[in-house]
Image (cartoon, rainbow over all chains, first blue to last red; front, side, top):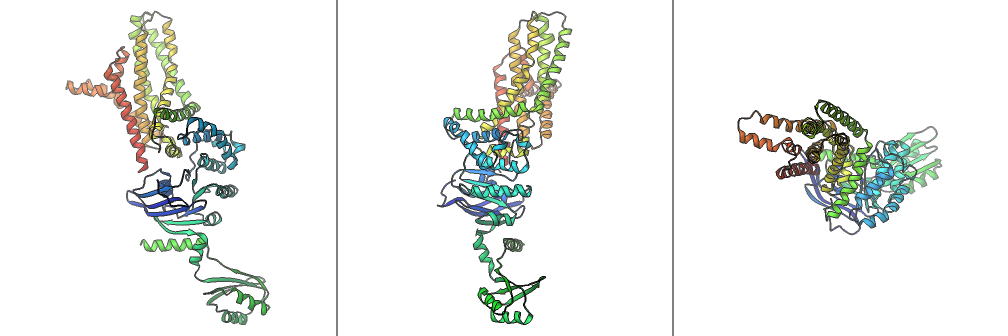
Amino acid sequence: MSDISTGIAIELKNISKSYPGVQALKAVNLKVKKGTIHGFLGPNGAGKSTTLKVISGLITADSGEVNLDGSLGFLPDTPPLYQHMSVRNFLEFVYDIESLDQSKTEAFKNKQKAIDDVLIKTGLTEVSDRFIGHLSKGYQQRVGIAEALVHSPNVIILDEPTVGLDPVAINEIRKLISELKKEHTILFSSHLLHEVELLCDEISIISQGEILLTGKIADIKQKFQGVFHTVAVTRTINEAQILELIKMANIDDYKVFQRDHSSELHLYSSTDTREKISDFLVTQKCGLLELRPESVQLEEIFKRMMNQSEVNNG
Amino acid sequence: MASVKSPIRLSRGVWILLKKELADLFFSPLLYVLAALFSFIMGWLFFNYLMQSKTATTQTLTPAVVVPLFGNMNFIFIFLVPLLTMNTFSLEKKNGTLDLLFRSKLSDLEIILGKFVSQVFVVIFLLAFSLIFMLVLSSTNFQEWSLVMTSYLGVLFSIMCYLAVGMFMSSLTDNPIISSVLTFCFLMGLMLLVLSTNAMENQFFAEMIQYLAVPFHYEGFVKGLVRSYSLVYFGSFIGFFLYLTWRSLQRRKW
């Protein structure tokens, strides 16, 4: 693991991996920038976990190169926990096996501080003396994250960290992940698109072992936007006014939805026409309640990419 | 995976894992159930052998009590070892914790040795329960304590071979039950191997098969004979199965 580009925390170059009868990864290239949360998206069986295991060194790729900037902490989809150990004992054990490269004195000197810090960071201080098996699933997931963090790695990989948790625990884990961004680079896999949109700076979409798309969420949305979609909500507007608006503002297509006390206009054009639309609706005294650009959702992009991938792969 | 840099580093890694493994094993009620079972069976056998012995002298106690007692001790461990080793790797695989060990700074050798040595300690703990029989013997005219020492050594070497087999079987599957059944079948097969040589006409072949079976080498120790080739055999047997365990665990990465 060497020769990593500047500003990059994880770099995969042409990683391929096959199992008997299955090509799990097909020349995967991926770059994760330092200090970012990078979302790794894909449907079940797309190759997410395989990629993450290759990065963490748990499985060996058939070909390609993995470069990491510094140490790595990894939380697999099922947190590896010894249920009969107390949280503190478990973290001490993980710290011990992760600090074997340090001198014994140095490791011992930093141990308690490292464990106390990670307990505070993950909100586990109060339950530190309880057996892991007696904790709720949300807390067990926190212990899993604490395990990945205890040796202060530069890079953290989290494989679907919120799967199977209740809504309260999901929110807590998401908050924790956002806080971790301050000190670590995070590669975070999920199939929950709104979660990725909420947490990540950049994303990569993988399907059938291939990276289909990678980049900043905003850039990707812009790329897929193509058509300007504006939504205008008015108190009163008649058919004639709509037709005049369409003509005046060069609207290519439109839809009108009648609500209880308002009309919702969805207007599609090749250029940004929001100013013209607002001027018209104000002049015509249509009772403009709301005017907003409707951006393309990540979910829509994901669906399009999946369809494209299926077509390409026959 | 970190490479082993020095014996000090190796022993530090082994020690960390050994402490954790011993805590696991002594935390489990299984060990105490096995200890109770072992003590009960051995106590019952010892009592019967002692009652059958006409006089309490070294000449009578050695063939009537000590030799059969150690023979049975060795045999009982064919049933106990599969239960002791079944969780070594199977349960860790099942819970995903084996990956935690393998992606840590522990080397493969440290992981295997840490687990093996902890199992040896547990066996010593179980064997310690039989010391009470030696205390009883010491109150008689029994004097052949060197034979007792070599017998304990033979039993320990023999069980270490069983442990190595058990660990290998545990590395093959994530199901502890399958692991224990495989270990038991293999160990029983080794035992039967010695018996089957009695029926063989080809003397050379029979001796060769005998040499490959653990009980043949163990028998020497119970007779008070510490043969160098038996020590080589035990060392090679343990080394070979620990190597197979390593190979089997390496397979996970591919």
